[in-house]
Amino acid sequence: MSLTPHHLQLNQQGQLRHFLTIEGLSRDLLTELLDTADSFLEVGERAVKKVPLLRGKTVCNVFFENSTRTRTTFELAAKRLSADVLNLNISTSSTSKGETLYDTLQNLEAMAADMFVVRHGDSGAAHFIAERVCPDVAVINAGDGNHAHPTQAMLDMLTIRRHRGDFENLSVAIVGDILHSRVARSNMLALKTLGCPDIRVIAPRTLLPEGIDQYGVRVFNDLRVGLRDVDVVIMLRLQKERMQSGLLPSESEFYKLYGLTRETLALAKPDALVMHPGPINRGVEIESEVADGPQSVILKQVTYGIAVRMAVMSMAMTGQTTQRQLNQEAN
Image (tube, rainbow, N blue to C red):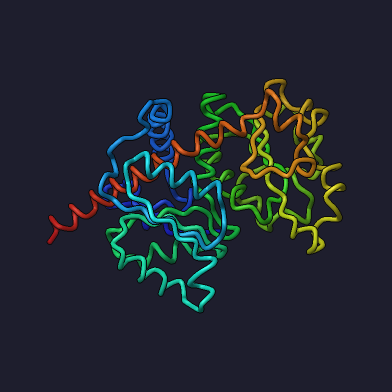
């Protein structure tokens, strides 16, 4: 399960330095991140939506996989912190010319960027970069393979906390393609770390990973049983290619058994939150009336995502600066 030694993410004083995975991070650190994100939410409501925390810093969005929503929220977060932003869509450029991940990294370092926000199709890519990058650069994982998507998990945690308060009395259900979902893995770790006592995963057997028990979750193959009396329902995006690989019979069959409709949502608590990392496949994972309904906080997740990414960037940059000072004092 472990791809990232947690000490790589923290400086000598225990501050965040890279943000690669939820795994190994303490409850106190996750709570500090949520508190910091809370404080940034009001920046988005100002006439001038900027604070000077990263003025003079350069943030490089390095996306080996396309993702408009994640990239644009990271870009907006960096700009609200007054950083300069470079967007590199490498999936269409250098690696297709045979350039290795290490070559790309060296070219980026030559640009004197202070932070890399990395999305990659291979599990462990952000960790690989963080291990090899020059010591003054912070690395933020914007999603790697099936492994982790820690900022998505933290924006989900902020959404839950703002609408439900404490985690300690909650039942949370994660529904859909658990097997291929980096969001599911990061959410299970975050919920457990923050003290959620009842984490449920609901999926067909073909879409459950081996070793799911190690996450401390309850597994359900029946949506109607799994949703009973939950406080929060997190739907996952169903990738079309899973159909072609034979893991699922058809979209309509999946929707019939695992789609969130008004009828199945009624099994949860009356005020249960409906969440989804986006983009939504309407009529495959979720009914439009539910996605757009009064219990849905899907658009709130996007708003909170900007504040969470501002918090991650500012905390990681502070951790890097502190470590640099400690290194200078030691020399």
